[in-house]
Image (tube, rainbow, N blue to C red; front, side):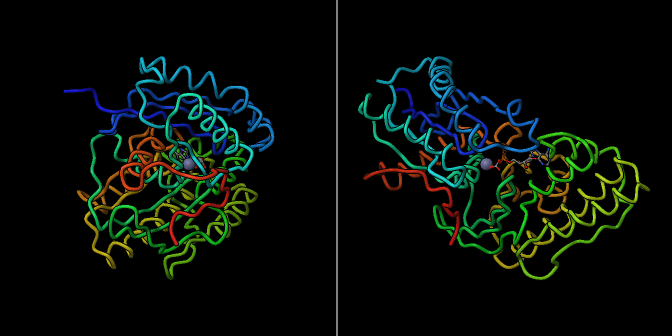
Length: 328
Ligand code: KG4
Ligand code: ZN
């Protein structure tokens, strides 16, 4: 049998310069991620201008490494998939310009990928198949979205955050607790050592939208009061976030009776959230493995293959779409 066809995927929407080679059966042949954490840590958040400059410096060597690790040559590739949005405009532009140049030089078709669809398809990189209808909870640094997918490629928005995303709230709380940047994983680790003693608010119980800014303010008050340990503060915060996320996801599951419950994005790397989801949603739950929960190019490859098979190559002029949406 001939080798499975492969594509090169490129991701530069935020502060990770990433490239991957993914085969048509969604096997990750190589995945390279160059994090910019060291550059942005001293600012406590991503500096967009610096991020695009770093992408420009490192994109070619990251792609070279991904091709070398896959022992792939341009002639062996079927297409190039690249993140079109959402994300930081200057960062997206670097990935897109690079993908266009390579596609022109190598005579390959281009496939534009929505970063959020990339997160959704991250679960398929390890032989898992999403069954439809599906309910999707996407929890990342930039987004908190609840959606219903009646079939492949169709997404209906059920709810979204009205202010901060849950990942952003984790990062801000980390900063208040002096845990540095990026803080989500640090808060999560600390939370495992504490107990939910504070009884923080569970914001926005009604409906399927989210709001995390009130919770962040309540946390700020508790931190200033100085009565609770850092571990208990982190545990109380995480418990409130997990309760809210699982309650809303539970509502969507009750309303749509999905075959798959898919939870993706950076915050889906949280062991606390994963344990609770497993308990509540059991066998229909699908999570990405930890290495594909946070930003990477392999997930862009998975979404790229899905798009390429369904609609073929992206035609016409392709430019960054910083506000591209996941679901209408
Ligand atoms: O999906 P992602 O890598 O980037 C975006 O597309 O935004 O998500 C990054 C977010 C950050 O806010 C980070 O703090 C959070 O995911 N995160 C976590 C964990 N790992 C990453 N939050 C809680 N627990 C974790 N273990
Ligand atoms: Zn992301």
